[in-house]
Image 1 (cartoon, rainbow, N blue to C red):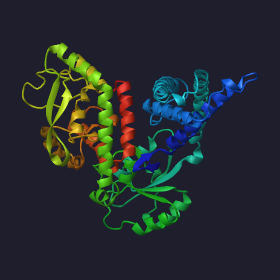
Image 2 (cartoon, one colour):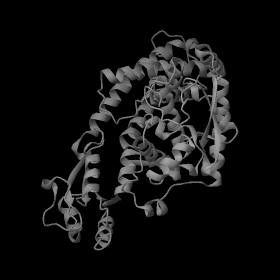
Image 3 (cartoon, rainbow, N blue to C red):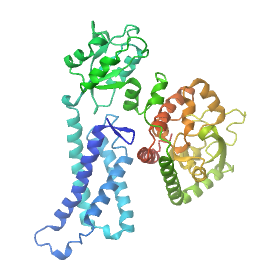
Image 4 (tube, rainbow, N blue to C red):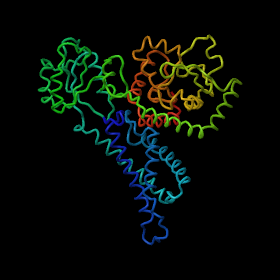
Length: 468
């Protein structure tokens, strides 16, 4: 994994993105060469080349954005190189064409002709399919696997090993074994336990089994913890990783059930500096104003559709908990029946909730019901990206049963967020715990880079009507 602006990015994804960017740039030049360097082609037909490199950059950027929005760089699922990839590549090219049409309309000097554009798309499609096949097949080579050794053999070691074995097919781990700890019960495969081994001989075991990384998966570190031996291994070039960091890296979550409080206190992240806050506010204002200008007609149609369905109010204001635990009134297009909480007691929203109207169901899937929250962002009560604000009634309950739940209130809530694009609707305390683990990851590692990634993922959610 690579860490870019505090966010973990797969090395395979990074290499794939870099290679495909080169393919897309090369496709523009090759398309132009095929179109204009022909026998008998008059020089007058060749377009001016002053802005050609800029045009190539615009083409590559539009296509990479479109492919990202279609989920082509999410390799945590087993996708083939043929049918599923083509089903994503074709709509990506359609979206890219629409974006390029807008770019060429706003900057006509970048336009390089229909013939070149058609050939460029053809060359790009072939190049991307070939590049993706080569990169992904190469990533499965055994030489690129990581040899991993777990210090511990209890429940935490079992969870870590389960995560390592079910990691996506393009990020393979070979488990060298487990070093048992006397204070823990055996919860892992006995065949993988290094019998007779102990932490005092870590350096020797690392060399013997050609270990690349040691994951410290011990809950109780009091008494006899081999800190000196781990330091020796690190000085030999072996990566030493805490279990909490391993979970954070592999799942983009922060696990709270096995979290040491000191890890949060002394670890990195949690950037609340003036520069970060200024950049985030500027990002919020820019995105909100642009989205409001683009979606204002959709907002008006949504208001009309809500009113026509049951003649009830179009908007719905509800108290939510924001930064530092302060409450505010969040504004949404109403997606539930007027009597959704006629008993007066708040209820969890669930998938396929019977209280949701037909219009409301469509608006939730496409996120149209969230558009009025732009006003909350402009007022400074919310950010464009951040943890979703929850109702005070549920917050009081969750603080009692979910560890570290209040940490999510250290930053402004958002219209969309990391938990929203990675997890479904929450309808229980268990769901709240899962979403909190994503929210904690965002609070700890929030950056402009991660905000942009979340917005791209949100676009995919909207396009595929998989609203969460």
